[in-house]
Image (cartoon, rainbow, N blue to C red; front, side, top):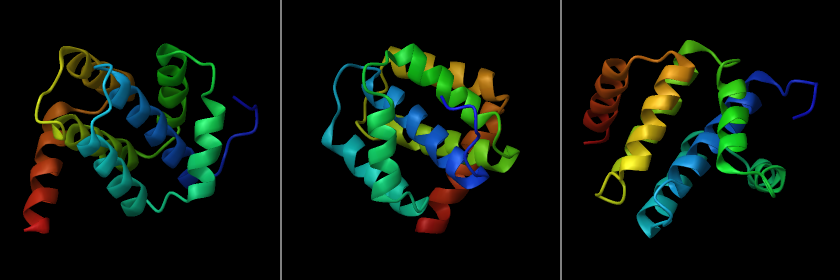
Length: 134
């Protein structure tokens, strides 16, 4: 990573993309439903195609642990609200293929621990978000 920190919103967006990438790759299969949720996340978080391409280029040749660590660093510079929002997105993404894999669960718990976000807050915020969509 560069020594110059990106703007706050960009740091959050990049951290979110790092986490999404690791979660999508966790079970070894990227499902179409996961791709669809990724597109929704990009739209909801106003992630430009340029930023997404920059992210994709930045992770070339990196293993999942490296990508995760960079995501943690970015997320820990985000606000508490942004970290919660990111974990809600991940929770939703984990449900996308209708089969939560053991590696996805492990990643989610590690993400919660590293970002100091409470799981109950994620579940509550996720339920609230679902009820608003109805």
